[in-house]
Length: 123
Length: 111
Length: 98
Image (cartoon, rainbow over all chains, first blue to last red; front, side, top):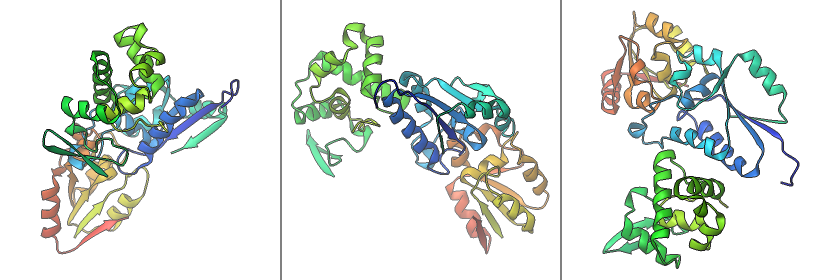
């Protein structure tokens, strides 16, 4: 991509990990997108907030535990992680249950943030 | 799919020569994989290999080159955190070649 | 009958449909459905209510994978794959709700 064309990308994650492939696919696309020096934001809402739950142990289901990879995002200069407050509350979770630092915001704030994006990709 | 043989034991590799099972790796296997890449291993090489393995254990991915370079600079000193340094050690690409020798999968986004 | 649900209660209505018609027997929650039987989940009350008439089980490895083992609702039994097989053998019929 040529210089001077930085766009605001938002990846919206709404699915729980492991039950479907969406969470892992999204993470891989995010890591690849980091190579293009764009302005990347990640949103976790609905069951997507479960992706960030601490303490995942996948040995028993013989799946790769990809939750540690969210901690690598910082090294990829992906630092804008947003979590919807209402989604956490409906699942009995708080910010302390999450394995990375995030910004928790209301659904209204989330909606406004979404409006400021150039590209929104949903997973 | 292929296999390599090291010290009388055989290990599965994919079509590009990457180890299929991460747990198969040991220093002898790493040294053998280095010969398939024509890389002569020195302490500096092993330092990068060990760094990559630690990174993988922590984050479950092989880092992109840019991320690797930055992280190496932080951990091993700024003079080593340059792509020049890493390409001198692994001429065909630090991510690609070093990951193979370290027994890791090909990095995501590395085409 | 053994009812098996594998979808998150907050994403699909499989659990609702199952609980609406189930007449006793057992309910086994697997994959993303295990979230239904965790404290604080918006669907947890449905499970608690349903337990009056149906035995509820979750597949332990699926809870572990999701980091939710320490939040299992009281009264719900966690089983391993062997326990899954035992349940299928115990009930003459089973239904996997899609």
